[in-house]
Length: 331
Image (tube, rainbow, N blue to C red; front, side, top):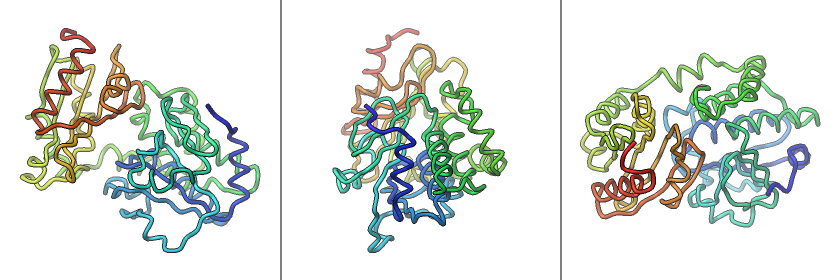
């Protein structure tokens, strides 16, 4: 339950001169765009630093000013007056930082319906298509207090955040407010052409290889309505690929006509018996409900979870079996 209004959250931030912003692991455009959008808006008013337990994907470096390492060690003796998180539903989604900062987080800003109230103050708006929308409204509140400025650099980061979580305004979570905020960010100087090119039109040679492997290796189930693809450590090693090279393959699967549920199962490098599940759904299939069976959750149409198995084959069998037993074996 929310225990703070957004204007009150802005007042808290406006009082501070140094803030630490926490983001989630497997960073995406929304968590990074939200964090850096706020950072850029606070420049000249407050020192804001951002940390992430995972390496930043190359394709998102345009949001972070080229930084790929956001670990807290780089900040030295930085001692913030306030600690907050953006786009992080649960503490464990911060990786090691979730435990390190447990009980020390002052403010949580998020848009996921399911999550924990782990901060002193929690503000969650599940009607927002992206955390970037909440940060946009927060910055407007801060501007009214004379404590922030929506600059073109800030607007570009926030546009990347909103565009990422709405799939360039194609996903079902896109609403009228999303479009209004996007228009306001364009008016504020967001470089939308560059964002669209980097997020949707620019692909590395490795990403093309990953897409080829996906199309050749996907498992089609339930009359073609469910498609599953497993990303194994062996596959990555043999083809010289990294996890981030497979970042867009779930959208390739989802785009196939007749697919209601697209699933990727990614073997973890540091623990070969741990597999990260990502799901995208449509129709009457709810990804968050399915991922709840795998210690996960998220949005109705986009969610994630984890499964443990002795091999990629065993992990895929377990995931498919549980999915089909839940939604039925026939479409």
